[in-house]
Length: 136
Image 1 (tube, rainbow, N blue to C red):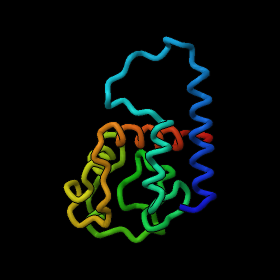
Image 2 (spheres, helix red, strand yellow; image 1 turned 180 degrees about the vertical axis):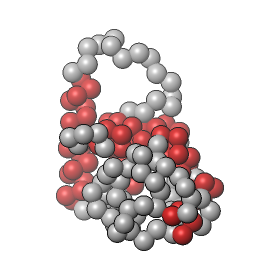
Image 3 (cartoon, rainbow, N blue to C red; image 1 turned 120 degrees about the horizontal axis):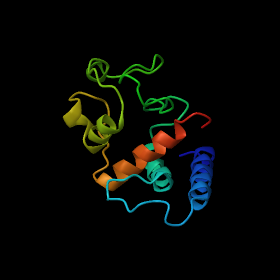
């Protein structure tokens, strides 16, 4: 990972931490293990950034504007035919399945990396939701 990318992820994690600390104590209800934490997700995402970036295609496609996007639809990325033809639209549920085992969801896809921990997947998904909201 480039030093600039690493710095960007660290800054995003710091900003997320600062925004979480502004919430009044007790305002957040107790959550189960599958509830995502965007701050932790930014840290886990560093493993994803070996191949992906938010705003540019690298070994994998960019992740900006991911939610609601049809899989295999970024015009300037060479997807596998399997993913282009999958009909998947990215949301929390499809991303969780994809991150758990991309080859099980779409046999023949290029991606083989997976996040085995349900908590890691929930955290990365929450992070991606945060960075994909307006103004981020």
